[in-house]
Image 1 (spheres, rainbow, N blue to C red):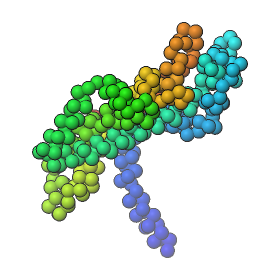
Image 2 (cartoon, one colour; image 1 turned 90 degrees about the vertical axis):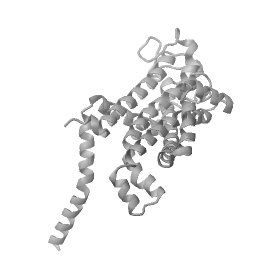
Image 3 (tube, helix red, strand yellow; image 1 turned 30 degrees about the vertical axis):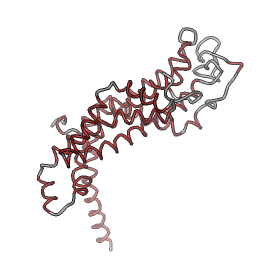
Length: 305
């Protein structure tokens, strides 16, 4: 029995080793980019902050302290550690609103990337496999969307749909979708002529199996990198729409809305503008440098021997 158990353990270890080998190789190339590793830890920290916002925020984001209007940060004269980063014009704690705003920003990124990636993959696969009139129609629509500046098109769409966080996210999804469609189509065209696809077709695999089971897994590397970079761009565009009053509406503690609420106070209450801006900067920078590391780890052409 002991011999059987030992053999089973070795067999299981052998089954796991290819996955562990792939993960080890991925981490080796990813960790060569020190900035990407730092970005990964910052992203993980942002996720933890967003998940535990109710526990770590010192105050409720909407709670107003009328006796502490525009109180400066704790290290300045007149500040207090009760409000470490100061308060806004109606006495709300800036730190608590930034912490809760992380939830909105990360949700925006997840929502936008998930929908744009899903729709982009489906349309890109259809365009890459069926070609002809179907491909022409899909790609010309994507070209029309790409012809407009992304933020301007998002503003027009939100103006049509009405200012709100949901409508802003839908507009950003429409703006970002063509990038995933073009990437998927290009990858599919490169993969569909390879031997393994021909072998699957000869073996009797149908179109759907070829598209989603055979070809799609081999097209995911550039899509993952694009998704990571689009995540940071979605946070930035949502903040821009919020700043312009077309995204999340007050009193929602979304980072762009925090900037919009305090833009008239930049000279006399710098903390109300600076700290939300720094939150956006850190989040976008972290996702961008992490995306660079993913590109280095997933693109075989960039791997050093």
